[in-house]
Image (cartoon, rainbow, N blue to C red):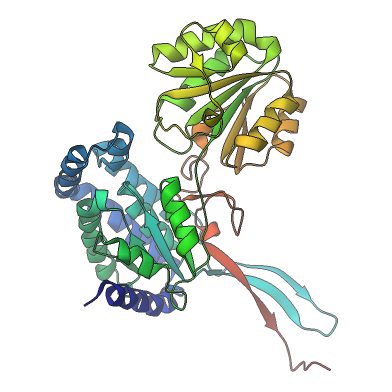
Length: 418
């Protein structure tokens, strides 16, 4: 069988499963999620054995430390996956919710009912934990999902898919509700992107190169997230200790993820005192500072920032730093170089914090908190299938509600249109 036929057969089965999955009762879906969480914990050694093959291949292929970190199914990651499923099970089921019922002048009662998107094609790199996040969210939201993972995680993903299949079959969920394309052939990705009669939306999750490839080659609508160029703006009269703690958390906790801090902007009124203190703390964590001319004057050991550093997603212990004269200059910089992902301000002035929130166009804008909070679990979604920065049809982390849409419904008593 050709790769193209394999992908089409998987998508046909997913389309058939989607019709039945959309009406599976909430209690059944929740129990399957709980059973899958337990199965992950019980089968951790088996999953880690498969994951070890991927890690060994990744090291041999020269994957970066950040990529290997994303690839690893540690005990902590597996526990987090299981807890994510339990969190999703505990959330309200959006499917079937009816809103906005209103009586028209002709007596027709019109409203909207929330429904699944249908069949989701999910293309992603490196992170096998995302396999479980996607499966859990799509199941609870009534969507069938076709998963196409990267070659780096093929053994891990196949082991997870086998476990998911077993749990879904035991729960009576239609075959094809969760499918994984079992090949690393790139032709499979291209074939999936052409299944516009069977797949309703494509969600890519990975590096900028993958996202652009998907967007340029898909005949199916794509929810895009190119990169996370996240900013922290330290405003005048900011609490310096707070700003340092937020900067270190944003940059150093997990530098290889999309909500990690990449650029820090500092108001000129604070720069003389704040920047040496912040830079010392950041450099102690191994961070390289790439600064503007004013930053270079204040921070011994900083290197000169180049133009390409301002829009860069470093995914490493590198931080671009610029001194700005005003909040307007900071917001102009973000508008020019940002990726509409996550921006934060540290300020002691509520009105200035609100102005920043109202004026900055990103999927999450924070006041006095780390950029690392742009995550489905941290924002109360239980888990996420990705962070959409393209605004249609959702903006930011995509959880259960974001994986649904609404259809109009109407109740009449014989009305006909004149």
